[in-house]
Image (cartoon, rainbow, N blue to C red):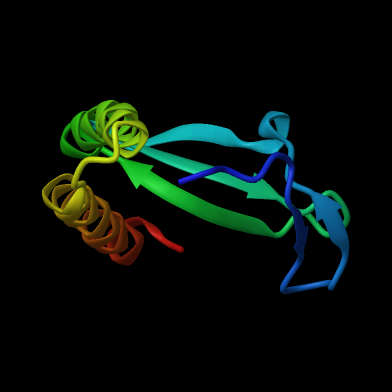
Length: 108
């Protein structure tokens, strides 16, 4: 559940390697209540879609953040985390499904 800070990515179009800094991520509204997060290659400006968010995804992400804290607490207390991890994975895959549907509608 750790995040990588400024990962190095390679552009699929021009093969340039670059750091994906938080400042490169942009958000645009594609429909009412639907946001698209993306970044562009600094060399060729090819657009990469990171994810789409709607109300359900935002709520799921908040719940997942809370669950991360609960999971860490349970790990520290050496308690079982299976139920919590199962729910976390359900939310994670639900978000992917929703985002994939939006990619079909609004572009990749």
